[in-house]
Image (cartoon, rainbow, N blue to C red; front, side, top):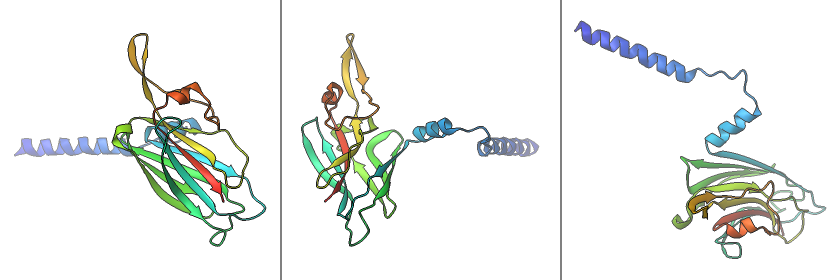
Length: 200
């Protein structure tokens, strides 16, 4: 009986020490790079855009276009839309995107989209045949226009290539994706999404 009690006592102490070890965190020396790395580790991305004001209010939309290859648009969805009758849309201000993947699984990507006026949760549910790692990139800034999609975010798949006789995974990153998509690397990307805004 004493052996059992001693075992339980030791197990309890061990559990407490492990639990306390998990609770204790030292936040006194954290910088922005630490936070960015932590967000990336948990599958979270943050993107913010400032949208130029207009003289008059227009209908405002955020649109998701899906491509299988550069010239093959396969699907279009509206992520967000509202009119000047609902909200003053001559000054959208800042658009913020929070993105999230879970357990490195790219079949579903979660989005939280917010402006100064509204916020929505959305999901990008990927067809099984395109499920593999995708990367978020920003587009080059473009001036605001009416009745024209202005791209903000590029969400693109890696691809397989043969390098020196060996199969390898590739993705060519950009500081900013060109608005016209003119790039040899983009020609290689098998699957991607573009998130744009539209004043109409």
